[in-house]
Image 1 (cartoon, helix red, strand yellow):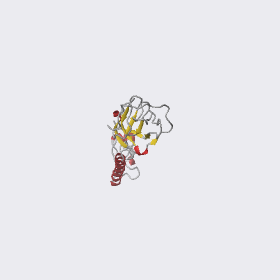
Image 2: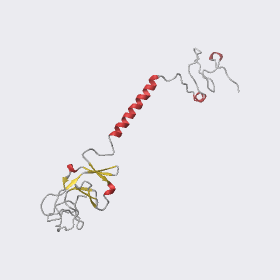
Image 3: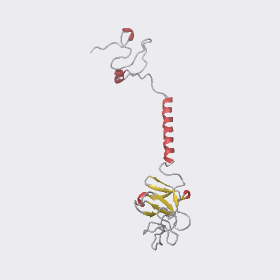
Length: 190
């Protein structure tokens, strides 16, 4: 294999074949380091990276770390402070009515997911609330006279149930059928 001269004045290449130190064709000075693989790709590293590059990299790392820490501390998996943690979703089985962990109401998962805020007991016999002459049907509507039950907004996050009892609103409409008294109703308190 023939090795050519690295001197550009002697007709050699400015970038040595197979690596080495590149030479400026006009001045003849060596101006950078050229690793063997870089010579094949014609990549020239002209000088070492200085302190500004190191400081820039550290600054970028601090910005990314600060953004990550802010995201972590904001606890994105949990709703805002208005919503109270009512425990894992597995504590409220599908197809059943279960008392909230706080005892402030019921989670109704018979047909759709609803949270009722009421201290009234639940009647398994007819699916309504209340024990005496004033009863509420399964849709939270009062049967005789009085106010309908309160339906609370709920959110699921990280397999937990969160309920905003203060934002609960009365359901609209009247009951469709009269309910008889329920002698064996379950209380809301656990």
